Image (cartoon, rainbow, N blue to C red):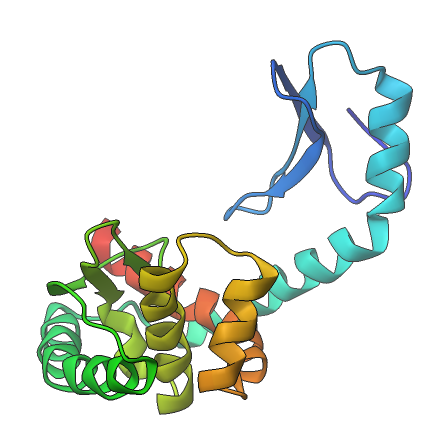
Length: 195
């Protein structure tokens, strides 16, 4: 699908889903995921309503692509160092915030992930991305608090975020930093895995 005002062709994928969404892939392609019976005019209107947002995301991706030209993929030694440092630092941060929340937790695992910064299982086991060690410490703390709060609430409700902000009032600020800067680190990590 070609839409005037959108700089590239959009691939439309129809399925049994109930809502329409637009996906910007890592290579800069645009995909519209639409319900089976949605009219093309509705898809076009939706995409046009998101044109300025799409432009911002495309510009951000172009900036990241330029930055990646100057930043090499992580080496195996760098990745091993990140894992080792994360294993030293993250458990202490988890213990600190768990005591503030008055909760216990299960196992802590450090992973070399390309999609998630952290996760919490129903059993209270915590996983963290080793790349967090390359972030400002406030970002690491924000992710730790987020995952620990999942032990209390396995959802992303208003109550969940209220609980986070009670323990870590600067949560929103540092998660915004992660959203704006974290993708570049992930892309360097992905490039390292592809070598």
